[in-house]
Length: 187
Image 1 (tube, rainbow, N blue to C red):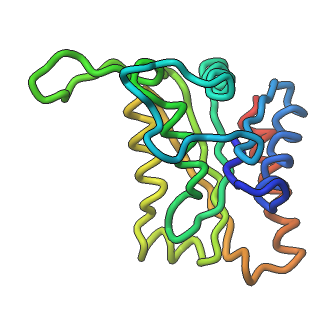
Image 2 (cartoon, helix red, strand yellow):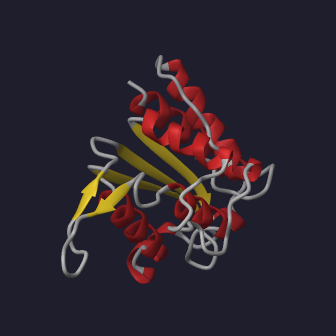
């Protein structure tokens, strides 16, 4: 999952390096690039009319197919880009990713995306230690909670930063790291 809304980005370079490593290990990879999709950023799902677009249907099929979903995105204002949030709100909907059970307070639900794992690769302009220890990782916590709510059994993260002050050598090192992690996780 490439969660950068622009067609060309360093995030996409990292995702392609991970993909290369994963395919080298013999695993099959499918990519959803949000720069190629349109998602409703308003009310994402009309419960009275549960028809979904062909694009969302394709994304849901990819999610069901995958055992391990890897997310690549930049951290913007301590959050995910709006189009990535819209992707999540449009694709991981009730009836697909989960379903509430009848209860007085909707505190019980079925998880439909069980036995999946996930990793977040997040680029940021702040140093990762600052984001982790002072900002307290709100995006990781939100993504981990939402994915586990849907049934994912493990969610991990890898941070790349500070991108804004990184030089070419540092960025090449991060690209190699992404490729090596793809090789390792693809086995």
